[in-house]
Image (cartoon, rainbow, N blue to C red; front, side):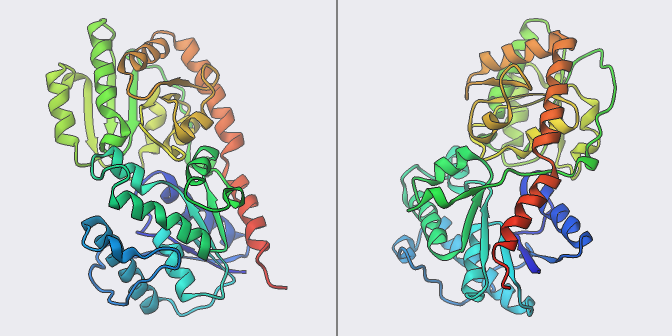
Length: 375
């Protein structure tokens, strides 16, 4: 079969779809499948001019709203770039962003298009304070789900909780498939080590949706109790300066290392002890599976796909969203008892290895792709 994996931007960032799709392509190509990767270069801006129309709603009633206008222009740019660069024919196109799914179906109407929805742009914007819930941007972005359902051949998402979220915006939610993300186990090698002072690590984009303000407050509580630790914060984003100022105000700046963006944090993640990320929303939470595969104990919030990965007290700890005191308590528990921490990390590693292996994803996708094969 000749299959196109259609991403939005190039797979530069760690985590999620960027961590998975290139490895999927490599595995399929190694087994004799003809698969290629396509994406929109970030330098392509304001190139597309072709008119955009949707079948299930009129987007023009949102015209003039900056986020909507930018979304539509990006759609036009993707159309322009696709027409410029793609010349082949495909048996199946697998899209990984709503714009790519709709554009590919527009330009390849007779080709089956499978669409994996990896996350919710509108929820991220709401949590990051960029748009208001039920405002015009929110209405526009959630209307895209119904458009996708109407036009692409199959919708897939990455967790049952996110499928439930999508069910509010589509006609037949029962038709949405669920294929959790998977990871090439060879990329992750737990390392036996002993840290005299517990080493905490988080990897994420520095935005309000990740709950890093709650993490800093929890760390301040740990310091007030006299518990030593170092927090390694990997990632960059618009609130980095705000977080650094908050760390100074809370008197924990000396306990935190701000690394900025890092391409392959999994290379040295195994040398730490606890992965923690108090996200306010996650469709799946790929970095938790990656941390577990690195042999770390994991602490997260009881929300979305995180709660599907972590069974509280068995392979990690869950705390309520926006509860700094509960987060501090969970961290204290894993920091102060190395044997308990080891037991959590061992079970987490076993579950991640068995549940989120790339081999499992390959098998599930192969079955989906073959169901559209023309005999």
